[in-house]
Image 1 (tube, rainbow, N blue to C red):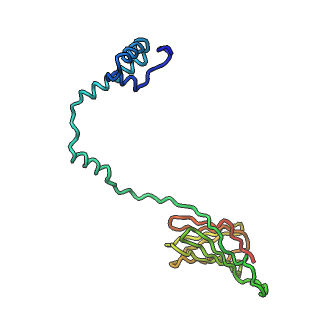
Image 2: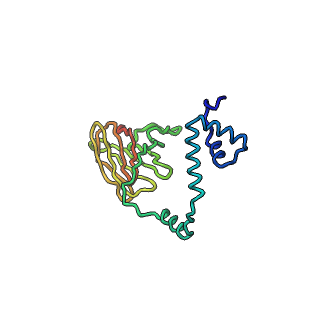
Image 3: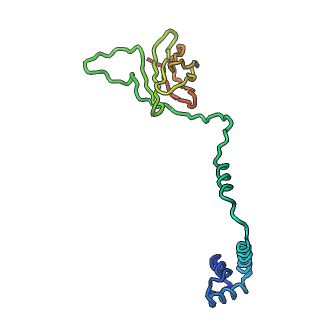
Length: 201
């Protein structure tokens, strides 16, 4: 291949500038540089850098200065209070008393209340009780597990209601008309959503 059709690698040019080539290789590179302006320019840049590096007489910083600089970078300054990122979790239904099969030999009878149990995460659950009340259906429940309080919202086409969790993380909402609702718990750092909560017999 003609020397005009390719460029020399950086490694080859560095070996040339540093004098690590055989006399035949040195002559070949010199012939290429005479006819290739790009490689010649790169070789000249390498020569300048190597000359500066070899003439550098500066001393390394004392060890105690290096250690101090490392400690400065490792020091963590207290952060200003920032609002925490809230997680949103859709609660997973684990148990619905309306879906339980009757034990063999038992008569079917209308249930006064419906019990639901939702998984929030590996450590927490949400228990919800739906029972008939004057004016519709009452929704009550409790967060089981880690809980430090929060707010409960019930929203649907037939209306909405809200309340706070008490010290035992229990809640009770005023009676609502029968319809499909969404239940939302706003806990300390997470929003727990029950997207479909049907208030019915």
